[in-house]
Amino acid sequence: MKIGRAGTPSVVVLALAVVAVVACDRGSAATPPASEAAGVVAPAYRYVPPPRVRTYPSSYATIQHWIDNGNVKAIRFHGWDVWQSITSPTPYNRPVWQTWPSGHELFEMEGETHVFARAKHGVVQFGVRRDVVHPSIPIATGPNGLPFDSSERVFAFNRFTEPTAEFIWKNKLNRAQTLADTNAALTRRGTALAVRAIITSKDSTDSSSFVLKPVYQFISGTEVTAVPYWNGDSSAATTDSANPIASTWRQAVAVDPTGKLRPGDFVRLPVNNEGYKLCKVVPLSDFYWQRITVEDSIHFTQFGAANGDFIGVANDTSWQAVLNAVRPGNIGLLVAMHVTGKEIPNWTWQSFWWAINPNDQFGADRPKTIPAPWNHYDMTVAYSMLTPQGGSNVAYNPYLETSLAGDVPLPKQPPKPWTGVTTNCMACHRRASVGYYDTTEYGAPYGPDMEIAPGDSLVFIAYRKGKSGRDSIAIPLLKTDFLWSVAIRAGGKFKAPPAKP
Ligand code: HEC
Image (tube, rainbow, N blue to C red; front, side, top):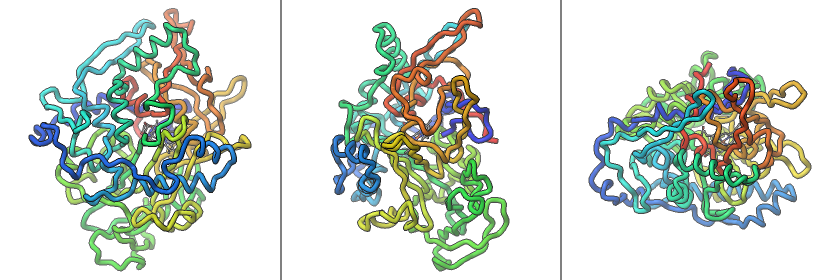
């Protein structure tokens, strides 16, 4: 995610999707095996829904009751139950979440025309272009009629439970044209700003609807590698407390894929440009990990690589570093995962990351029923934008939001700066919306410590310069049900993110 990376201009720049880059990223793919093309999906790849685990699923009313009472204990307990559910094993030695349809399958495999929009003389012009999928490649479909790509089963950048994927697919919410038409229709009808929205499930809540964002770090498959770990944002633990991204962490574990070193011993390895440090040896089995196959490395989606949420060796998130590390025989360590569920209309938000001491303050309440390696992950939760008392409800993942920075523009006051370590998942995702067709950037104000109402005109009306250059045209936005993937990957009207400093 790159909403104003540290060091980028102060506006919140939601300039992520890289449709031009994604175009033809399967260009070199061979024709899929016949079994796939015929719609027969190997049993190991068949969709497995998240099973019941204790409080999962719970009704909207039950969860809302915890929220209203500030019952953090119950909320966290539920977050763990969700984790145990989605990480449950399948008969094929992989967790259920890894059987779920991917963002690439849902958004980029259509082989259909994608809309583009550009402002010319102040007028938005729509056009269509055929992009994304190489036209000569037949698209395989799974049993549910969704496009299917077996190489997406391992390292996908976003995942959706099948009911969510199907809903988005059947209602064509993966297409910019649908979103543009919907927004235009709402304008014609004079629909109130607060209800200018699509939803991505049949009902206003759906406990079977989950969306994920897994984050992998790629390491050598044959050598001991220093893998820096999160130890908080103090200056002892990071060289940049304001934006403590992984490449600033000052401590590391030595991950040993050879099995030759003794777990618990210490070895000296270079850590993030700070020279050699003593690193505790941990076995691969402390992580959820996958060895990269030839197929994975050929098909690794550039959308994910370019997005900066996969991590190459030495904690480098640049596209090149990631692509260099995605080599057959290397290993992907699951280091973090965002999990959101439509269990309440504003979705429940929980996020997980690998911890050296999984019984610290973010993991001490983890139920003992969660087996290895999933019990090596800590958790934060955000089921509301603010606490019931109106205080800030900070929840961020050290691998994902720590790179963020921006300013909240305030009326008649100087803008208020913020960084990722003060953010709240729900408040930022509430803003997921489309309709701003300026070719440059989307500047909806974001700031933590805010309850964002769905009808907030500061957030959900964008302005574009009119013909004269002095007048401005108001563009009411269409909310995309808290899913930035729909806003960004369906559209293709956002520029590629700025290069990382
Ligand atoms: C400042 C804004 C911001 C904050 C804070 C934020 N996200 Fe996101 N999130 C995004 C954007 C933008 C994307 C889409 C691009 C990407 O995946 O990098 C995204 C993607 C996701 C996705 C993939 C599905 C989708 O369509 O949105 C999930 C799941 C997710 N975030 C969960 C979380 C959780 C859980 C937290 C809190 C721990 C969180 N996010 C905090 C902006 C944010």
